[in-house]
Image (cartoon, rainbow, N blue to C red; front, side, top):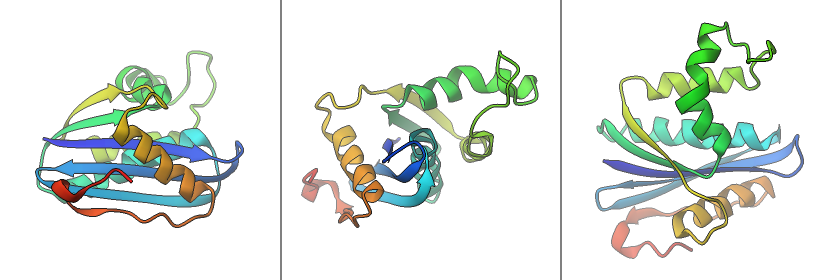
Length: 158
C-alpha cells in the first residue's frame, strides 16, 4: 500500500497558490509540489490529490491510503461526487459545481485504484501533514522548497 499526504494553500482566494504531496512507497519517500499564480485554496487541495495519484500511478501499486486535511476534498470524493454526476454536475441548490474540471480529473486518476480516504486534522501536530502544509505554503509564497526523494530511513520531515 502506498500512503500519501496532500495539502494545498493559497495567498488570497483567489491568489497565488501551491500544492504538495508526500508519497510513501515501501522504503522510499518522495515529496512533490507545484504552484499556480491565480487560484484558490480548494483548487490547490484538489491538485495535491490529483498530482499525488498521478505520480503514485507510476509505482505499480493499486492500493492507496490518501490522507488530506481538506474536508472539501474528503467529502467531495467520498460523499458528494456521485450525486453531482447524477445531477449533471449541479449542487443540491441547482448551481454548477465549483472546480468541476478538477473533480473530473480526480475521478480519472482514481479509476481502477483502491483508495482509502482519510481525514487528518490540519495544524494538529501530525508531522507529515505539517510537512505537506509547509511545502504547499512555500510554493504559494513563491519559494522553491527543497523536496526530498530518497530512502525513508534518511527522511527528516524538514
